[in-house]
Length: 254
Image 1 (spheres, rainbow, N blue to C red):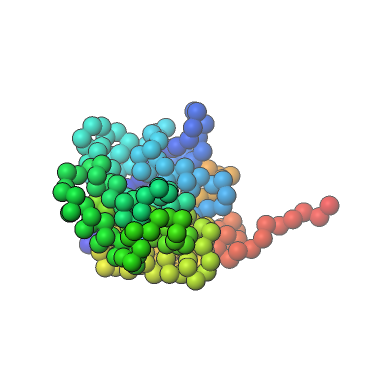
Image 2 (cartoon, one colour):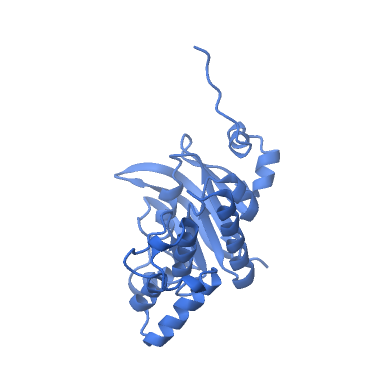
């Protein structure tokens, strides 16, 4: 039986009393790659920030591995936050630190492991993403794709059950992007990690995503959810078909 690892119910989120997304409900299954899609301004990154606990919701609930992150406090909140890892769009690596030192940071912050053990774990995580020979390199000395891989290695430092990736393919060439897709599939199939990916890169989504939700800035909600191929080929919603088939918006004649 497939287990649910994230459950969102009637979630409304926004800033300053203004709701950007309303009444969202969806589930993420353990061990799948789940994508959050939508056009610019649809609220993808805003939803991600709420799912990882950076912002409180206006209403509704978000259960991560059985704990409601919207209401959890103290040690319970810390416990659920340690079960997730996040890799941001820019990579957010510290430029004055080597890749290995960047990966070590969560271990230094949240564990009391000996120095040698932290070094070993950092090198193991870099090996998992194909960067074992670049552990002593600075971020500026490696490519953009390698920086993204290093960010994923750092996100995995504490062995999280869920990895959140914000626009992982942004700014990458097609070959590098395809390699990153293969890495995500290898990690979820080999280690059972659940991925929640924010993206608008359709080729990548069709390569890696088991299921998706699509957000819409005008309805301020979810307009579609399911397997990406089914939404592309069988959706009755013209907005959904337009997005998945990369059709331009209609332009009115002057």
